[in-house]
Each structure stands twice: as structure tokens, then as C-alpha cells.
Length: 90
Image 1: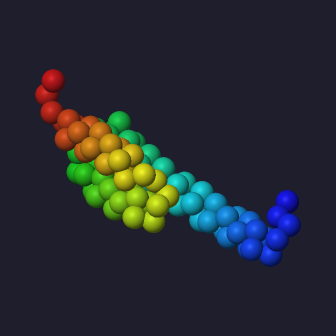
Image 2: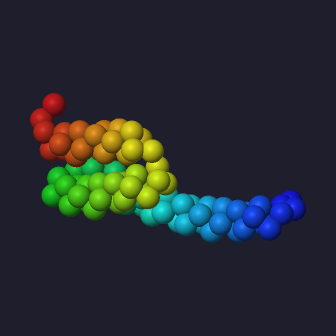
């Protein structure tokens, strides 16, 4: 438990930031899941549209410091590769 005024303020700020970051991560996961569902259905147009939105959300997460930029880059790259492969003959 915080014993100093500054430590109490820090604790309050941490609570708020944690709530914001949790919400932001959940939002990112939702958009990534929509891309994965479109990939699974085999609909390339829907997958590409969902990818654009998900990429934007991931970038926002990186810029706000919720996710590390390398993590975002890796996830974006892997999703893009999977979207590109949709509908391609193997």
C-alpha cells in the first residue's frame, strides 16, 4: 500500500493506465480475430478489408505504448502473409 502522497498518485495513475491498456488490447484482439475469421472462411476481399482495420489498430497500440512495436510488426507481417495466401492455389 502506498504511504506517500506521490506514491498514492502513482497508484491511481497505474490503475487508470491498466484499464485503458486492457481495453485497448481487447479491441486489438477483436480486430485480429475478424481477420482470422475472414481467412478461415476463404473470403479474400473480406480478409483484406479486415486486415486494413486490424493493421491500423495494431499500429495505434504500438504508438500508445500498449504493445511493443516489434510485436506489432511481427503480428502485422504474419497476418498479411496469411491474407495474401487466401485463395492462392497451393
